Figure 1 (cartoon, rainbow, N blue to C red):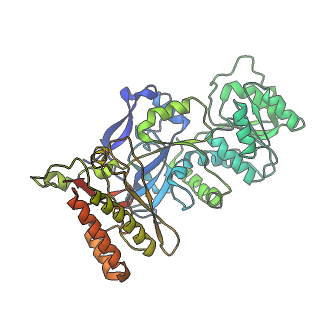
Figure 2 (cartoon, rainbow, N blue to C red):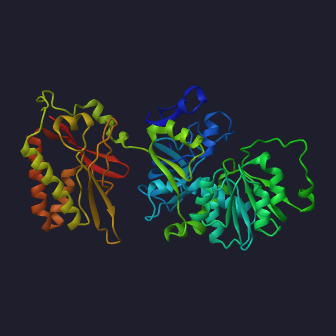
Figure 3 (cartoon, rainbow, N blue to C red):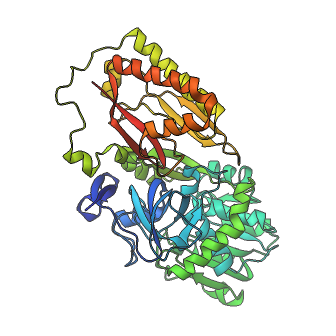
Length: 503
């Protein structure tokens, strides 16, 4: 059995403080599913309700929280969509299970990650934008030049919906929030016509003034019973009210006047997304790809991210969402601890010298110079070739303190269609068990650094002096007390590197 880490809930339900990272069995893809190594996942209001035991989870959903994510395809089942392959960067919507290192999800709900967006941005798109598309088009049957009202205007679904409304020629776009600061954000950043403070204003009366008494054609509501009467007041004749949640309660007061519902010929419809079947959700996935993704690429649409946090701070993240102070997505990123775990073969074969020399307490000036030269060589290699293996020196914080070196993290990104690679060197310390490892994935089948170096030497002769300098630098590092751990290649989030350890 292969395990993975995932966020779990003590005793099955409870407050934010009941969340913790546990080890569970890694799922296996079947039918049209893919196994995804998760790089980031988004938080949603339903996660809070599910954590407390107050959300009707679909029967096909795993107990692990989370419905939206981004990551890398690790494995594909036999019936998966032909447009996906191992190693593809994707994001998508799931019935659950995104709060984990790996997730299995139908390929019908995956979308290729565009180069213009980060993994963090992509992780915040699926649930919110698909919900907004569903409410606006499939349920409300919105048409250009209609007016529209989005309640909870600074919530993630409404942030998406306001952008969709603006792009699709809404005559007027209104929103409600619970603070003047959020109203300012909705109008100035998102482009709404007007926003009203539902805590301090009679928002329905203000909306009628803004529409010369006509009211609004489409209302997307998350508030429920507490806003029911005001929604009827603000609705135009033949308006369509779509209810997606009931944050103020489910039961209407006994004195509720239903007259406007009848005389205005209002159509009231409730809708959910998570419980819908895969075919229905797949249609929405296609609508996202066709209608919204091009506008993300050209910058028309923006994925608003309030905060990016390491997933080990999941308790703090849930508490932040509960505060109702955010104006965008809270995104959790997963570090690369899985890559540092020994392989099954390594658990049976020793990887260290049985009689190693004592670890040095400090590193010599010569080794420091070798480290600097190593750094420069790696950068130069990345500038001069489109097909070269970059070596990552990864050490734990304890080792860093012993040798007096800063973390060395090399990163690569594809610059253009000719596969030019730029290597960026960043130095930072991490107050976690080990440093974050970032690797360069150039070839899926490369197993060892030496073999790749030889291929580069054979095919690109101008790299010979640079590789020679690199080899000398590594030798000096070995002399100073560092060496490759049996030359073992490790991979993490689709990148590759060589692991070092102290002698």
